[in-house]
Structure formats: structure tokens, C-alpha cells
Length: 473
Image 1 (cartoon, helix red, strand yellow):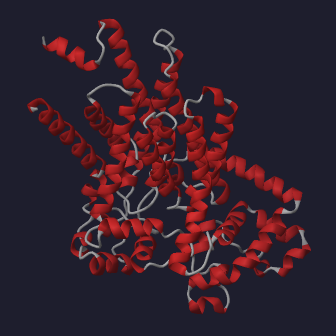
Image 2 (cartoon, helix red, strand yellow):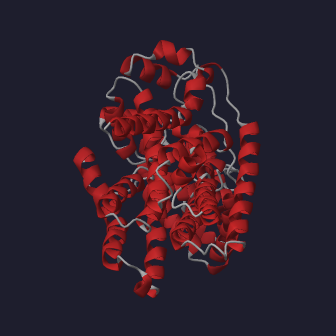
Image 3 (cartoon, one colour):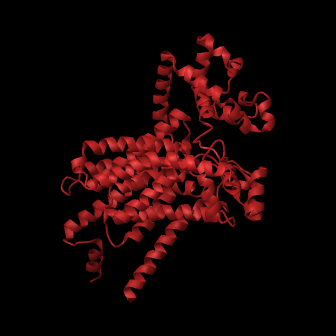
């Protein structure tokens, strides 16, 4: 009994330590990080209003997890989920009884050498993109029914906190379903896996319809897709080509801005001087312009891409951007928010943390992570080299199918994430930065497994714990 208590205490000590490590950027800053979109998420949950440009679910998560008391609870929850997934990963792979210690060490590596802790420390749904991919990967390798369904729930929730996640999980699930249908005889839990994948394919879309109806009294998924994709066509130059080549394009309101369209999609969506906000619609707020012009933009998008030459150009640009997005995962800057009324109001009136927020580094200045980005890139290169080396030289120990499956699903998830974000939004470092640390995580997990396997084979021990006991004796 005494030994059991000590083991539990030691496990909790290392797991709590791991959580603190993953919160360190926020601790160092003096307050959770805010991104420019953070206010919209917080307000949507607090007010119970579905934003035009994003789902409400993460806002509700922030509302209830923070209990309108402190945003620190949100960062703590995100860090706890992250640490829990790492602990679970080691448990599923069945390394040793030292799972909590391995989890702690893994968090040290990921906290120091990747952007994982940075995204965990933000009041943003970005970290859930990684949770979604990782949960699906673990579903494929766990044999425990309860664990599998818990992971399924996390993947389902994660898919609905951001529109890019919704599209990513759709493409990812369809691809994975096609693969396992081909190799169905090798899949132990084929039926249950297909049921879970089918649920992840269909339920996010249905649930969002009902969630939006609950809060907005109408069924819809996304009212901003036409505006965002118009911005994408502007950024690629395809819309400008349409205006130049085809006279039919003169019927659309943006035609009058031919030759003077914004260069970037975010400039079209958010700049006050954007043609999106031309006309009387702006009198009733920026959101009204999105709603009023959405149908017209939808027709314009369809007309533009109905021309084979423009569609082909768009595909070529998207493929190029896809590769760029895969390789663009730097930790982007966070702008100082000391002069932003919305964040002052939120921290002061909603959470009573205005004084604490005012002392944070982000309140006072822009935060850049250039050195951290360089470290992350080098660590990623090392991780890829380790993975390649392991799978080239493990013939004597044998290939672990569990780890190979895990690696395959994660790599596919990273590729699909880059595809969806680059095609529908454009290349932005945070899109891939929020998930890229999954590759070093797999490298660490794989390294631990094969190091242990090598030690067992050399010593004849059945576990690393036995090796420790032998050394003590």
C-alpha cells in the first residue's frame, strides 16, 4: 500500500510538472497569450452569439472552463489535455511503468524545442488542430474500447472549434477510410473503427447545424466561406485575371476595383479600406457587409472557376502553396495589445484580471519568436533524421506496426492540414506551426520504444524497471 501511494505521488508530481512546463510561455509572459482573433472567441462564448467568421464552440469552451473567473484555467486545461495525450501515447505503446517520467521528459523537449507550449498558452483553438490529428492517430493503435471512445469525443470536439479543422477531418477521415477498406483484413477492430470514422465524417457537420440553431435560431454551418474564398482568389491573382479576360465579370461589384484589389486575403477581410466594406452595409457593422455580399461573391467564385484556364491556374498555385505551407511552420509574432480596448474590457470587466494583464509583456510590446522558430526547425530536422535512421536500421529488433501506424496517420494529418489551409485560406505559418510538433513527438515516442527494446535484448530484462532494479542490486 505504501509503495502504491508513493508511485501515485511520483506520477502526479511528474505529470503536474509537465503541465506547468507546457504553460511556461504564458507564465513567462505574465498572462495567457492573445491573438488578434482571441477577443472574438471570448465574446462569442460570453454573449452566446455565433460569430459570422468562426464557430462558437471554442468560445463556449473558454466561457465554461474559465468559469468567467480566470483565463488561466483555459491554458491549464489545454496543457492538461496535451500532457494527458502524451501519457496515453506512452501507455498505449506499452513502454514501461515509467510513463509519467517519460511524459515529463517529453514535455521538456517539446516545451523547449518546439512551439507546442506557445500554442497551448494562447486563448485560441489552434492547439485543438493537433489534438484532433493526434486523437485520430491514437484511435488507430489503441485496443481499449473506453480509451478509443474518449479519444473519439476529443477528436469530434476538436473538429468543430475551427472551420479549417472541419474540412481537415473530412479529408483525413475519407482518406483513412479508403486505406483501411483496402487492407480491412489486417485491421483488428475494423467495424468499430469504420463506425467511429463515419461518425467523425458526418457528425461535426450535423452538430454544428444544431448548435448554431440553438444560439442563432437558424440552421447553417458557415456564413463567411464566400468572403474568405474571395480573399483567396484575390491573393492568388485569379480574380484579377477573371476581370481582365472576361467581360461577364463587369456585373460584379468588385469589378470596379480592378487593378486596385488588396494583395492579401487578410487585407480584403479585415482592412477598413477594403472594397468588402464599400456601400451602406458598413453602417450596420462589418458583419452586415459579409452577409449582404456573400451571395454575390458565391456566384462570382462559381463563375470564375467555371473557366478551365482559371481553374487550372488556381490548381497550380494551390499545389505550390501547399508545398510552401508544409514547410512554413515558424512561430509567428504576437502583437502588443496595450492599446486595444476590447482586450482591456475583457480582462477587466469579464475576469477582473485587468491589472495582471497590464503587467504582461504582450500588453507592453510585440512579441517575436525568431530564435524559438530556428530551434524548432533544427529540432524538427533532427527528429526526421532520427525517424528515418530508426526505420532503416531496426531490422534486428523488428518494425513495430503500432508506431508505424501512428507515424503514418500523423504525417497524413500534417499533409492534409497544410492542403486545406493553403487552398482555402493561404499560406500562414501558424496553420502548420500549430501541428508540426507532432512529428518530434512521434520521434521521441519511437526512440524511447526502440532504446528500451535494445536494452532488453542486451540484458535479458523484461522491462526498463527491471534494468533499474538490477543496477540498484
